[in-house]
Length: 180
Image 1: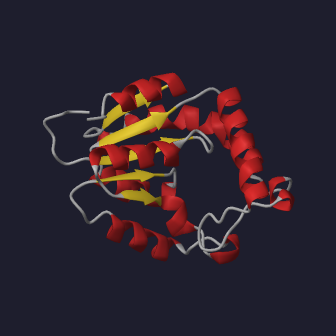
Image 2 (image 1 turned 180 degrees about the horizontal axis):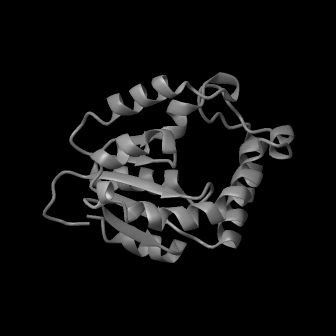
Image 3 (image 1 turned 180 degrees about the vertical axis):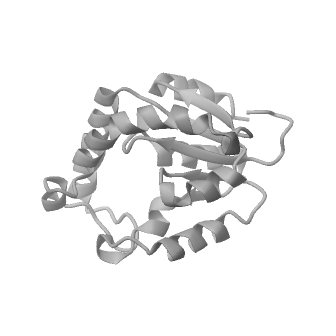
């Protein structure tokens, strides 16, 4: 990222389980900017999705600051986020890396009964159902890898600096470059 730019508006994208939220939290801490987690705005109690109007309004309101880092892949709000962003960080890891991370994360969330957003928790039943986060990652992985390069080439996103990180090691190296 350009060090001369005092305004950081960063979107972190990637397949479910790639580490978007973790990276966004680190960036938020290193740069002392707000972190916006799109999942928190989309998931209502009992895993119900917010209506598109409500979701878009929440996102618009959260991005009314000079600097921020947002994580999430929601096409319903991509136009809002990417129009205001100056940088997109794409976590483009291999499927084995993503799936191993996601399996461990899901296992620990179920065991610890960790609350995610608005009272929602992952359960064994949900993990092995049609709503499984593991199944979601498997079914969207190839699509995201194919679609992101096409999206980055669109004229409306030409203003974005794209940082393409292909491994956790590359991400760690990049993140270390932000540390004071």
